[in-house]
Length: 200
Image (cartoon, rainbow, N blue to C red; front, side, top):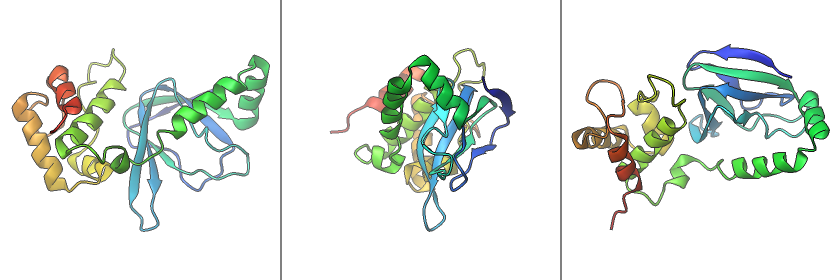
């Protein structure tokens, strides 16, 4: 039903404050959901990947976007006017399923700083990197490359850049990440262990 669109890394798909009269079905790639604070800083709320909807939180054609959606890598989307999406739900008796989807996604819209407040810095860094990795298309040859800079990780997690740099170095020493200027996963098993480790 939708109109296919292609997007490059760093493209803004939806902008906080804009009108919410359409939504996008994400059919390829990964995006990050950001919310702007009054001071101008942006908080990472969640990540989405193929199979997700973005812009689905605006219930009426006159409502405004509550977050910005930015691509992490090359993405494809299907553009759907809200009236067409509503007609699709009605024809397929899918309003209840869509409500369940909304509830699940609303539970994710807590800034990463709060989601991970009870983890130590290394766990917080490892968990975010692991989530980005797991959302990548399994057939993508470059899925091990994480499209976040150390600055972006620091902002997303509410950590100092020096703290993130230290944790990246530690994860490289452990073999979870490869050495080099970019963040590339070296051993997914080790990364998973570090992400889920319990610090006593």
